[in-house]
Picture (cartoon, rainbow, N blue to C red):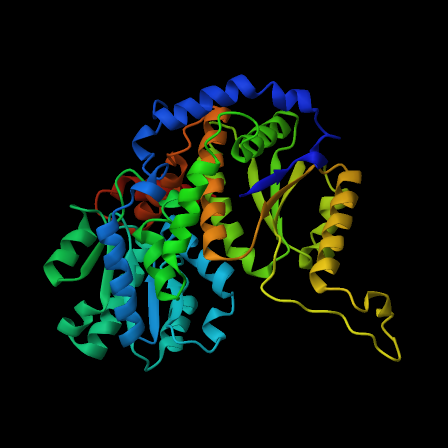
Length: 445
């Protein structure tokens, strides 16, 4: 079970303040569990680990096996929640160096999340002459970045294999019944998987959105889902013994006491994209109506030699949350050296995990002394079951925390502002007047 250690926050706040959150937590919890709050049409993820579509899940596994058998590369096209979750899980469990490792599964390249010419050209170069397939992920099929990427990589497939064979190598994860991508998929005969209507993108990693690329990488998606399902049971208590309540309650008390930035860290370098997924989850869910904790992240211990200075002595408006995986996959024991020029013989016979733990504890004490409250979220290991439980923990805590904050955790109206401006400047039909206005503003600067 996921555990939350909040002992190092109580120099900045008092336990009584957290206990006083209990009535508000109960209201927010009931709102989330009963679906009576804002955005309640997007709560399908809450019971998804138990109620997911078993028939589609089997099709995902079958498609993953086909891709593994006929492709050396899978190109995953999506942006935001359509790719961050899958990349986070693959890099955390399989390694950020997944594509460099010797393996019996395809390389994975994630694109459609940029408008960089160089980045897209590089992906095409990396594929080279190898056999590849495409998983395009978009609810509508018209989101600009992935739609552009899909047009480019679909054309590359058709040049290599012809239109008929290319269609057998395209897997579309999209709306069940409507939208540009669904229409195209039906017309061309692509295999399709569903982006559920009641699950928003940033909560969708445990749907086909994330599960197909994760399965292609060789990760056991049944164990991933079982971890999330057991999380549903573990996190069911409606009180502060529930780690979800602890995390949501403490971070909101810290926010109300002036700690406006949450820095997420982990001593596993492969956690980097899990932190990126977490930043979208919390930033897009809570950052609205002039409210919200700003989510940031660091890689530990590397960033202790860069961002560590600011965390230790910069402006005191932040708190830190550290994810600690208790059991590594193997052991490394420090050996003695006859010359001891590096002065490290005092570590001889000690396990590297022990050294890391002492570094983590020392850092925690230093940061607390510097005025940075610390939370620790403990998970057992970097394994599919534990990662599934951690994903569900963060999702559930996010929904609870958003309602506690008083916002709709399931919309993202601010995301549309840049899109409208971009459409106007690009001359998209229907945006001509806006485009003219924006160009006038730019000329006047």
